[in-house]
Length: 377
Ligand SMILES: *Cc1c(COP(=O)(O)O)cnc(C)c1O
Ligand code: SF4
Image 1: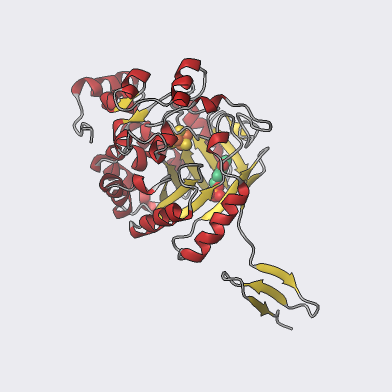
Image 2: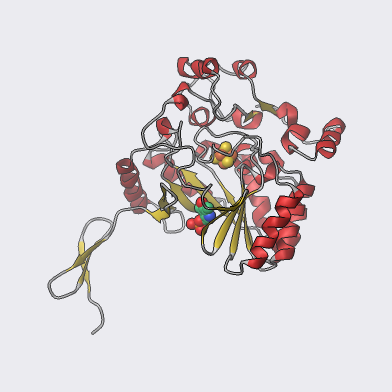
């Protein structure tokens, strides 16, 4: 285990105030690794990993919290934690139909940081920074670019937009990871939005409970709590049972105890969690810790992530096995975000087989037995 400072070093606090910027750099500078040399202190690079550093491409940079790195077995090149955060030359593979922006988020942006694809909900990209960069990141066109944090004028424009668009019922605060903002900046974002639209349901989307649970301080929770007068949800991303630790469980418990329900979105990843028993274990652990498994995502067609995507056929098979093993509470919705901005649609085996000659609906049970269901006359 690596020690992560839980105190705030004075110089770091000053840095945070001066630049009003990257919380993680300011406060936990020595708790992340971002260079090949630092990484090589912890593990021996594989050939594919070494070649990524040598290719020096312009893809998503390396950044791993020492906490997340500590979950890895450094001797195992196929470790599921490692595959999520240590880059490989395969990110340079270019596959037909893959794009930087497959979900057409840019064309659905109504403001530079505001995506309005579904009538009743919007996604607000408050920052491009994360505590740890996931190699499967689907928003690589934006993540860790020079967009940085939202400015005051951008924030005011977003607030004005939701004020004028009453059809918007929910807002996702996302990015990047909004918890890279300092507490002050995050509260400024939430307060400004809530002042414009007190009824708006907010979803705070953060992977930090999994990658940097130390960020979930008592102070942060105390500041969020007054904002739970309208619904505030935490949407997080746990992809593997190894990520469920004493620290991550405590981090989600702090949200839940403060009246902030926690939902989880798992990304289906080759060599990480493309196994029914691994997913079953993960979902059961989440439910046991009061976290509702919300989505299981098929990988988007983002450039540089092909080696981490699972064939759809395999995903459907996993969905069907999970359906037979998990409770309704533990079962996430398997879904795909369709290319060209088609939006999310649910995926899964259908148990409805159609109608017979007399117009009665025909079903299959989870174990495959036929059942009929007639409509009322
Ligand atoms: C995923 C997403 C949402 C939220 O969709 P839900 O199905 O309600 O979780 C909203 N806006 C954008 C742009 C999204 O990609
Ligand atoms: S935390 Fe989310 S936005 Fe950040 S790198 Fe991972 S998937 Fe991308």
